[in-house]
Amino acid sequence: MINSIKSDSIISAILSNPIESRAIELKPSIPWRDINHQHQLQEIVKSIIGLSNVKDGGKIILGVIQNPDRTFAITGMSTIDLQTYDQDHIYQVVRAYANPALRFEIRSVEYRGKFFIVFAIQEFLYMPVICIKNGSRTGNEPLISGALYIRTHKPETKQVNNETEMREIINLAVDKELELLTPRIQKLIKPPFIKQKIKGISSKKFANELKDIKL
Image 1: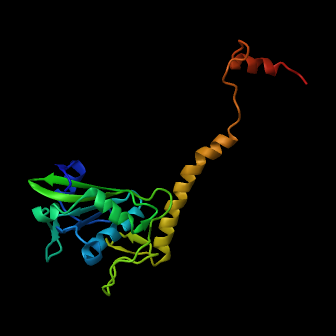
Image 2 (image 1 turned 180 degrees about the vertical axis):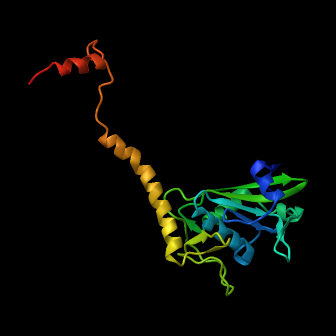
């Protein structure tokens, strides 16, 4: 079981007015047992992958139900469900479905006397995250090996199937590659400057003396 902490200002703001968005997905209380036989858990893994392929990532919060009118109500996790969550086990299970490695944290937070499981997902580091393992074969398989998932503005998590979504992910990856390469390029083209004193002469004085030298 994950030790609970008080909700921070961000989680409190979300739960005070629970609405789904591209960066926020809300789900009811779910026990974490055998992922191979739990469609809902596979949907969570799919959402983690999808959010990792979006700029700034996002959060999945468990313990929120959707009413018939499509509004949301915070019910919190049931005590029995909450006890099934173990960080190390979940990390191991979830990361087996994706490559490169997913970057996320799992927290149990308390808000107004209720407890919630929060998955905080970071965007991919350099390369988009791809699903590398099939989910259970139930006829409506949430996870498909080789699929690239993304969280959309609708909001929903879906397999990338159009050029706009693909271009968004590619552009994000290119931006990250440029961030990585720019310092290296600047280092290569940066002109050498004399920063040390040479035989007691400061670099500034040395530079001034060079001006007087005529070839």
